[in-house]
Image (tube, rainbow, N blue to C red; front, side, top):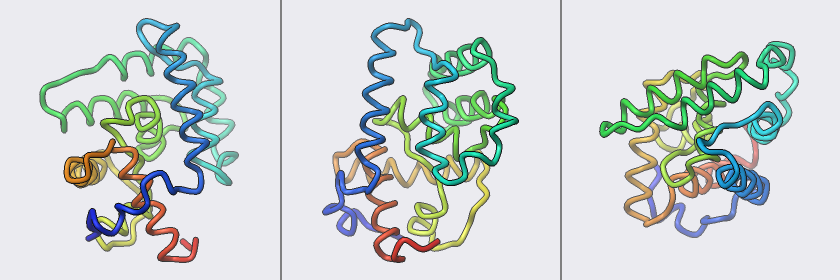
Length: 181
């Protein structure tokens, strides 16, 4: 399992950090204009482009079924959910976001990481490999809750936001594995 000391030098070192920061700033601008906060189709598409990279086109037809009204309603609902039990809150938010066509747990986690970077990170095979030493490419809500518990533990230890921990773990894996999958 990865340690805080291994990732400490990698704060803000992820190769796509600027894109993620720009997305976060965009969402903060939306937060100032939209009360309650929701994403529109174009806002969601920007996050999907960042998260999916070369796989962006895979479910494009399916995602096209998400209308502006549906995307705003579902994202607004997800972002409004607050619960004293953080695991239950994760479950609720992810399940609401996964109701959108073409959004699975990894994409839902990316949306949450951009919208709420203090509390959320992105689940993917690189982070999972470093956290648990296992090869895995399909993720459930239960997997995300397990991953988030570890990210949050490291965030507390480092005094970082959860998204920053996740990006450092991702960058550590990328460097350790030469960018290979």
